[in-house]
Length: 330
Image (tube, rainbow, N blue to C red):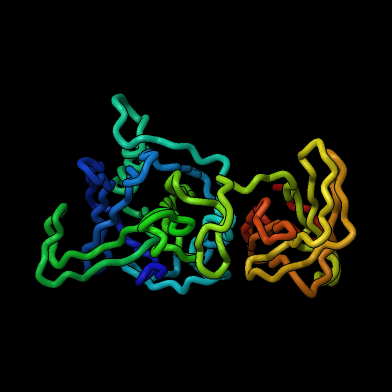
């Protein structure tokens, strides 16, 4: 079954411990106005290969950040569905999966392993009294009669599964679900900066069922053969029927896009018909207004092939949407 109590934990970090031992987790002690919590972040896989895939976006821009500052400190349960605060590495277009790289947690030397990559931003947040951490995953506790085994506060309380939670293999398939991925977001208000840290296991698949989150294909990442390069989100005049998405064929072959779909942040879909893209060619798709729609308040745009497999996806924020008539380039 999917994660039991999925949500986001918001708080101020006050201490940390690097991941070590047989099942290493990077540990963060955070607090809200009344309660102590621990964030437990996997830095090594129990399955081979043991190195986790990771990506750090030091200038994370995504519509999900627009509402997070309004969350109360502490844990907030999130419904696993599109259009809200839930994370989904595949459907949410949070980052380009092709830019994730594997990294061990304990390499000798400075700033070159997964512990240190996470630690850099945690220490920065500890030393910035205005900074906040938002940890997405599954909550545990409160454990009324147990002290936290790392930081000693009581009751034990926290959040784990701070990684991709779909496309699993073996005994971990029971954790599969959609719109329930984990992640770390750091907000540094003084610099108006968001930092995103996202982790996945190399054993996980990047094409999963839209209902169960179980793997449906073994390709490591969306292939990007056709990419979304631009969109007119805020056209002049009436928006329905005038919004456009520009696609490019990056391959040396002609691709027939008949039956492919463009999906928006609420997973409403626009079916493509009669579109054939030659090698290196671009095409402009005008959305009918009856399927996918591009919100001026921020959103995501996803390209799916005729089998519903994600080929490419982008996101944009409210601040990136310019005046009427401008085309947003990704």
